[in-house]
Image: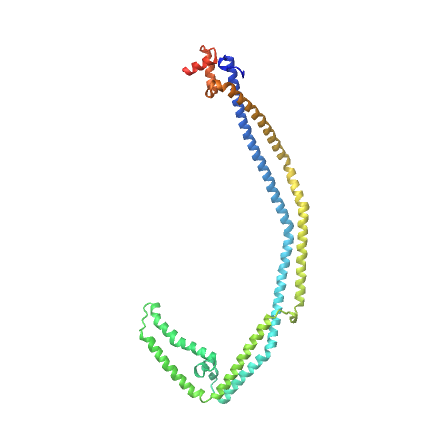
Length: 367
């Protein structure tokens, strides 16, 4: 038929054309269905593999955690014991440090107590008020050292600057409070008069009469401050000393070394258990899961192979059918007349007197 002009063909030829077209359409539809089935199988296989991978991941993770958890708890318990031992050591060391500080600064403490008693006795014998040996007295009445001048400056700032400044600003902060602008000025003037008068009075009645006694008291206070400074220096040096040999901490160190050794041992046992798990338990779990699901996966793979084979065969068949139809039918009848509906109409034209396919086409075109 490939070399025959089908336009000259009769009804039998047209029936053969229609049969070939129907077979080709059915083959194309079947091919589409096979491809859809193939996609579903591929999805099922992918889902099955993912389910296997997920189960393997979950089972192996749970099993590994079970192996590790016991060792981890033991390690954490030993670390808690280590912290307790460290606290006990620190407490014992602190007690030792305090004892060492007390021991090495005792002479300074005793000397300061003796000096304080000397100062007290000095004032008592000279019948001088003990307040004449205070820092406030030195700064206001007989400033000499830098600390006296600094304290004096602080007192002046508070009395003549901060307090009057607060009086000036207070009405802006507190509602319904009225303070005249001249009040801070009057306050400063009054404070200055009182301060100067009081200082002159106290100086004339105490310092000028007992200058030597007060100076001796000042020297005693200076030595007491030196003792305090030396005490702080010795204390700082002792606390910075990292040598623990003199505190009797060997028992605590031995206990901590024993705990650290236990931790190292447990950690090594944990590593060994993980090696054993990865070499034996994990492969066994994987084999158990994969072998259990292998039959189902094999069935899906076999079905996929069958579908792929059927698709290949049908593709080859429909390809040949399509080429045959296009080269033998379509060139004569046109693509639009190769539908089942139009071919049926051409068959009906033979019942109306047409003897060839060409006459049937002419009848169909007239309609």
